[in-house]
Length: 146
Image: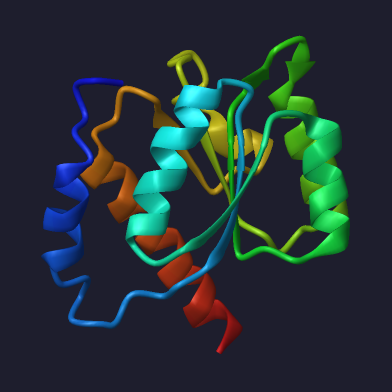
């Protein structure tokens, strides 16, 4: 994680996003690694998003039942849990919520859409690209809702 300094977040925030104001969203971040959650939660929060962090599928489903979210960022491997099974449960219960798969595994990169995920990012993706992808998904969601 050290290769992605958080100082670049401020650079990203200064970039115009298609000339529009950024959409501030409630994002559920699901990852079993505390350092990964901290890194991405900090990046998203610095961009003005409200981030809920959980480490397991059961926590994620509980949070989703308690409060709606605008976007889910999900790791494929959650300790002993299968993130793809969780993805299917999320899609079944909350079909309108976009899901970005964020994982260390590159093997699903070509067929992530068959799992009905909105985007697929490898954890080695730099923070600027990650934030840009988040904003693109949120912008598309906002346009579809209006």
